[in-house]
Amino acid sequence: MSFDIKSLVAERFGENYELHTQYLNRTLVSVLRTIGFDKCYARAEGCYLYDKAGNDYLDFLSGYGVYGIGRNHPVLKQTIKDTLDLDLSNMVQMDCALLSGLLGEGIAKITGADRDSCFFGNSGTEVNEAAIKFARASTGRNKMLSLKGSYHGLSYGSLSLTQNTNFQDGFGELLPGVDYVALGDIAALETALAKKDVAGFIVEPVQGKGVHFPGVGGIAPNYYQQAQALCRKYGTLFICDEVQCGLGRAGKMFAYEHWDLDPDIVTMAKTLSGGFVPVGAIVTRRPVYQGVFSNMKRCVVHSSTFGRNNLAMACGLATLRVLEEEKLVERSAQRGEQLMARLRELAKKHEMIKEVRGKGCMIAIEFQKPSSLLLRMAWKIFDNVDKGLFPEMIVHGLMAEHRILTQVAGHNMDVIKILPPYTIGDREIDRFVDALDKVLDECGSPVGPMWTFGANLARHAFAVKNGKK
Image (cartoon, rainbow, N blue to C red; front, side, top):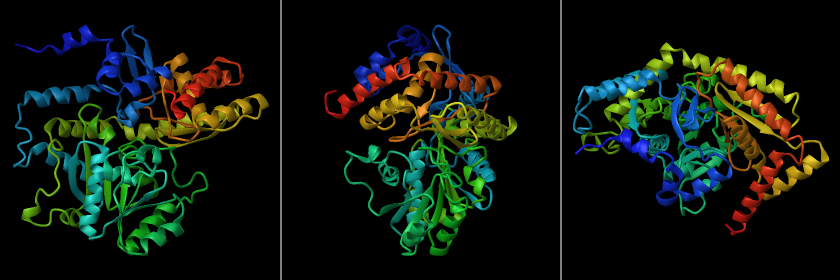
């Protein structure tokens, strides 16, 4: 008896959305069909996805930031093949495997200072859960603090730190002892920390939802340095969630380097996987680590069955090597600045572009009401139905007319976020900027195809909002 995955894929290709409607998330299928994202991709390489007809789709979504080094990188593919050929023992559990030790060494080198103690999980939310436990165990405190508008994951602890009712509603009581402060409000932060009962203050140095950070939007450039100093003063651990913005995404190996920070705990995932085998990591100082694994009876008090599996560790090692040898962190910074400069030039032509902001290849384009009376009326109608419908129109136009994947940056905001692979070049930048220019040109007429799509989207949103769908 044999199993032939190639034959199975060839035989069933194209059934994707029917299968998901029947056996997985049919609501997601409905959304994808509504916005024109119901494509079947046959293969992927670098910055592109391809359908069966060979049409290319420029990927400025990168699996929500996973594909920093591009899709199906040959070094990662070869690493997986080589690891399988070794026939290594795997997940013995009662042993200390070589590859996890090597990846721990590699991560300690790139985080620097005395952060030399790693724990491996399978995802960003899992390592953020670990950060909560590590902070509580090492400080003996129960409370956690995060920023308003943050996103740290969707398992219960991480969800509790995620100050967003769109994700929290409907799931009952969350983790107690969690509070939020506004990004930039240093007085509120000190008030919260001065009670000396907060175990950890967790921040995304560059926030995923909306791409906010100190130095833009009226936020003091030195906010993070002040926050870190307050954490030191009051005995709270300063935690940097680098799950999305880390490992080159924000133009530095870690986004906290933009502010010369020295966090007590760093979490990471996404790019670390190379896009193949899920892996997340938490790295911290040895005293914090030993606050969890404090004696022999507690040697496995926190664990993850698949967290140190060989394929994940091998992919993590290969990704770090690719980032270094191909100078992709530097490329992310360079290409990101080039792309933002082009977009800011485009903003001079299109008044609907309010602001372009970002770090490296993590960029937000924020839109605003047009001055034209007819367009302002159309905008207001959509805004009343569901704030954020306008950027959804842009996302649809980029896909429908130009085969470019992007995403809305968050709920209730007129922002799209672009997360291209760090490997983008002039060709990809030109294609994106030219496409956005054309889509915004089409938005200049309130009776054009973009607004027609928007009206259909608004009707759908209204029906859902009022329980008619």
